Image (cartoon, rainbow, N blue to C red; front, top):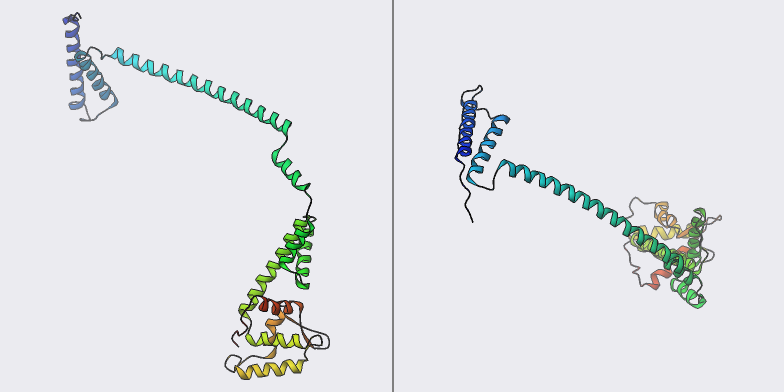
Length: 278
């Protein structure tokens, strides 16, 4: 490869220009007030001086090269922007095609979940299975009352419950609510109050008079004097009334309620302890 001939005239001009710029930089930095201040113009002169020195040292480095690189970068950015726009348009077209195919498929074959739901509704319901699920919870006057309360609440909210599944779920909900309530009662009731419920059950349906109840409570107070030191009969019976385990008729006789009967049955069915304190 033939070596490039040195142009001493151009090199001399470059050297003189570098000396002039160096003088300007030194004068600006050391003699112009405020001294030592680095300004934007000073930085520009330093950069221009470095470009001239590097251009003299390397054949492929020049101001023209820098400008051409900058122009090529701008062209590349513009080209990338155009490609991104084309990609966006292509994605929109693919999305539109996919959406139109999905709508066409739905119109031809129908909605899968809708058809599945209709198929379930057309199935014949086995009455024995329904009754088996209802019997799993059992039934009582109290559960029936709770079922009616749930249905009344659903009616007030305009919610339908006209299928066998609704009937099963309502029965299970009522049974669960009753079981939780009886468990809560059992955790707080006195052992002597459980015995009183049994006595009321034994005297059903005539119940026990106020005097019989008073005599029973007096015996309990004598048995546990420290616990019931400042208690009266009303305070002792209040828990049984508030939990709807007992009720008082017009003749002042006290009776066990249907819920009280369910509670005694619940104790026996699940083997609950009856020797609660007091």
